[in-house]
Each structure stands twice: as structure tokens, then as C-alpha cells.
Length: 138
Image (cartoon, rainbow, N blue to C red; front, side, top):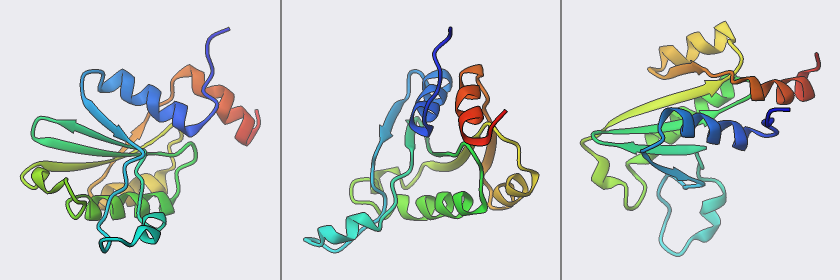
């Protein structure tokens, strides 16, 4: 039996390993600024699934097993907040690319994401079938 993907975290990790094996990848990285000494703000700021750093480009990835319009808004927020994040100002001259990665093609969500300038990437390795069956049946 081949390995299975049991969570969105495993799914996005496989995607990044497959397509960006030599890139610098940040995970669980908060984006956005908050007042100094106000740790309570950290719970409302965003944590994109992955931030991929390449020469001249920053890719912010949000992976969803089931794509939604809310995920598009979430990703848009991450893109807006990225350069406001302390330490990330150095990427000011870089292109910022937003990617919504999913195994499901939802035409309405795809159109919405693309209208916001995002890449809607359908990534469906066979190992994700277990998770799809678990969440949505057959």
C-alpha cells in the first residue's frame, strides 16, 4: 500500500517537496504587524500554510482539500499583510505570487481566485484519495 495523505498539512508538504524541492520554505509563519508587546494580536493574524522564497519571488501557499471563497479571502489577506510583517520588508522588490492549491476543481472558486490575480492549482497526487474519501465519501 502506498503512503496516504491524512491531513491538509501532509498535502501541502507533499506539494512543496514535489514542486519546490530546493527552495527556502517557511511554515507556521505569522504574517502581519501588531503593536509591540501585544502578543494577544498574534492569534488573529494569519498563518499561511507555506511561504516559499525564491530569487525575486515570494510564493504564499494556502492549501485546501475543499476550496472555498473564504480561502480566497484568506489568501488575499496574507498577500496584503506579507510586507507589513516585521523582517519581511526586505522582500519589497520581489514579486508576490498567491497560490490556492487543491485537489478539487471548483469552477466558481477558481474563477474568483483568478479574478484576484491568484493561481488556482489543482494538485491531486494519488495519495490524497484517502483524505478525499474520508471527508467526502466514495
